[in-house]
Image (tube, rainbow, N blue to C red):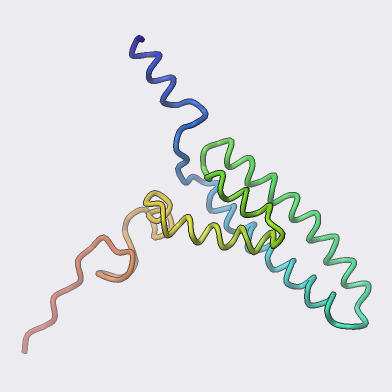
Length: 139
């Protein structure tokens, strides 16, 4: 095989996803859809809100389909792992996507760096930080 053929295979459809601009938007859309789902559950469980239940039910249905399509596009662009779409398609829907995003960011180094601002980390020496903690002042 020629080196050009090897490099084409390495960038094929099975390459590892890396967080990109769509990753941040997938997180935002997931949280918005979770808010719609929560509002739907509140109005559905509370008696006497048939109109609000219908409105939030429709908004949740359209929002969930849009969320699934958005995550699918992010997967096709290799900016999100397939696990995120699988978690979104579970019976808990947007809650599954929010939980999956949290787990992905905790377990995959590239996504962890994107979460904490490109490797800068949080406070010096804090959780997720790449910098050492400051030495305590001597008296």
